[in-house]
Length: 554
Image 1 (cartoon, helix red, strand yellow):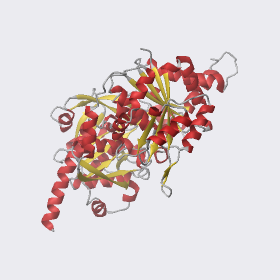
Image 2 (image 1 turned 180 degrees about the horizontal axis):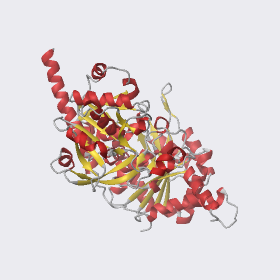
Image 3 (image 1 turned 90 degrees about the vertical axis):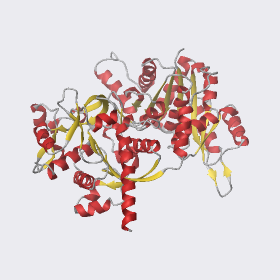
Image 4 (image 1 turned 120 degrees about the vertical axis):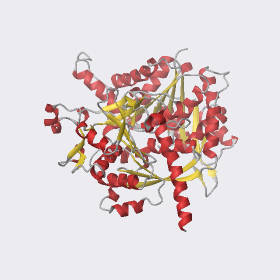
């Protein structure tokens, strides 16, 4: 079977959930035995999100091959359980950079380089490249922004041309729009969707399916009206009701016939009964009564929750598995700086666990360190990720191993570098400020990890060899490893050659674990990551002890 192409566009307003819709549809098609790949086309000029502020754009999602991508790629992976690549996140900046680089190298043989055809052809090449990676049955491409945005027009034109090249029988367009509900008159308004479809038609694209976001259920009258004025079949008007959990969406869309319409239109898996039993069980667990749990997340970018989207999702996955309903206490690391250790401990009185996730730069480091102390001394379950792991080791170096001026060379002042920029040559180190940030060495993407036999980490992973996705520049300085080990810290995760430290655990503490990589990217809603699973499990144990103590004293 030749690859089928599904393009997802949006209209009326942004933030309607095109990415979640694409991810949910991917799950429904996989449930029918089809292989699926999903990609996103973002209209911004940044080459990728690597240098975009997490407080503006949200988290950077890291793929197995080390691509720094939009957080929607995380949605795609969590719903489909497919490890995606850098080809799943294409920006205008990347398209233009590739074209300009080729032009500077003489690749166009002196010809005039233009948006049409060269930019358009570059976009199409990426669409077809994804179909060449593993020859999937279906490629789903989400177009960022809304129809009518100036910056999105090259992508819209490219998708129109793809539909012409592969044939409309092999291509389908889904348009996601908003149906506003006016509570004063108790009316659902269809005009915004009609106008949005008209705009899409002006670019030469007739949508095959409308997915309409709505606060309340729509009746057949609304579906008939939208079908008539938007020139789609009535069965192809699919409601997308607001729901408590995004993981309910595949079942809702299945009930309303989205996958059936897609399969009939593309003539694929038409008579296959989908296997959604596992997903149904997941939703049952999500909707079941769950025990409350307070998790303190101490970070640098807590003003925007999406900056830690995969971290909060990974915790939620473990919460679902353990029947726990998580309430996240978003703690600014900077807000802890200047407080006494007693004041910091008091700040976490109601916390059942503390997690310190990653980040870059010195801002908030000292606050992270004080949070690590509170967790270690108070025997509160703790998980440090990336920079959080580094700060936990620095805290231990200072307060237990008694290494004076212990810090990381990222702190931007003289110190004993517990963590240092290990991948620099002497020449690079001397000229670091002159090296563009994008060209500075980084350990990024999937790397193997060896686990010490008999360690807690080995028991959690249930193996002695695994891999995690990395996104960092600093490594533990081997000059301090023996001293830290002698002081009681166990480095139970290393690179296969033993030269790089991947993870630590603290014997005697119920749960005090740090990992330099980012395990949140590999967590799935129906298969929680072992580190997050243990973190939440120990948080439940700690809460029970805390409540018992509270009852006894009161």
